[in-house]
Length: 135
Image 1 (spheres, rainbow, N blue to C red):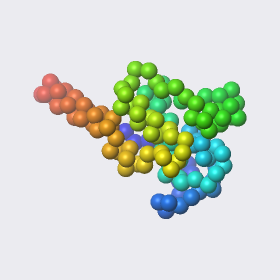
Image 2 (cartoon, rainbow, N blue to C red; image 1 turned 90 degrees about the vertical axis):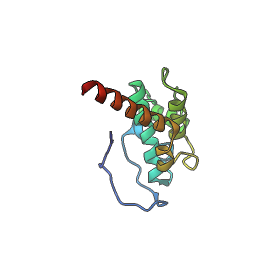
Image 3 (cartoon, rainbow, N blue to C red; image 1 turned 30 degrees about the vertical axis):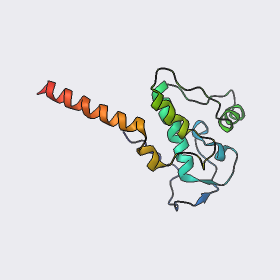
Image 4 (cartoon, helix red, strand yellow; image 1 turned 180 degrees about the vertical axis):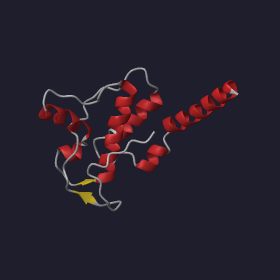
């Protein structure tokens, strides 16, 4: 599955800092919420963490009574890890939803993460089993 949002897409250099502070509030990274110059790629990794959390739990990691309340929770990364998911999945969420963008996992590191490797392997095993069953 690929999740794509081209609403504010632009071409940027790998280390180029941004000054555009927009987006859907629930997906905004702490640096965007705080209106600091930010690396677009690191902000997107945060948003990926929100999407992954939501896919795993069926709810957003950050909810507030108002945008101000929501932004305060985002700035502190105030959320609970979903129950019923593996330790590896929880570890990946912690890396994606890291407050400090310099410590936040990169896209390459995300693709190499243990949980995604396990998911890929189990998916291939599932495909083999179902293919053999359907033949």
